[in-house]
Length: 216
Image (cartoon, rainbow, N blue to C red):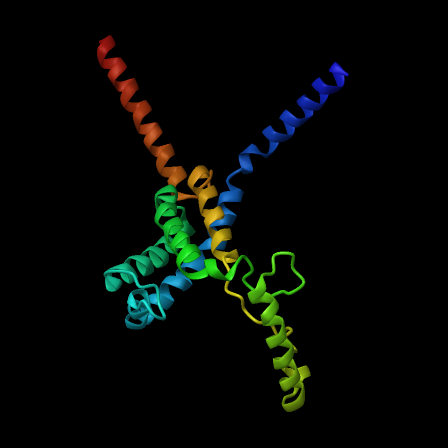
């Protein structure tokens, strides 16, 4: 049994060692997945800045935040320029922090009361009362479309659904950003990696030069 455990451990260690050179792929894919999401979100806010600021500041149908213009500018800029930084892996850990903050604001200020699901699915074990009510609305909408519209054409690219606007997407993006905060931009495929490597090389060169001077 001991020999089997040792052999298993050896195989596992060799497997891990063999894939280590490619461990930068996971952070790369996370960055490339998140980048267009945030760039688009930031661009939407910037291109309709007055409406965005009004939504940030209005307590009745918006977030009711203080200094709405400043908050809207910070959110839009963080998402747009942060998304661009993610593409290249520039200051990945640093940019992940304000992006996580925007996701927390989205979770608790916008989506929380809607539950988990982003799309209403009455068959889900995560469905709440809002989702179950949406199922009735969905069936009514389908009935209207069947009666008055070309239903087969309308659903030719996907079935009719009702958005629930829950925390699902924002929470997922937060977790992905948290992973990037701990991993950084990743080996080989990020500017961060090459800057750190250059800095390490410079430090070694300076240390070697200092040693030569001392020896002399």
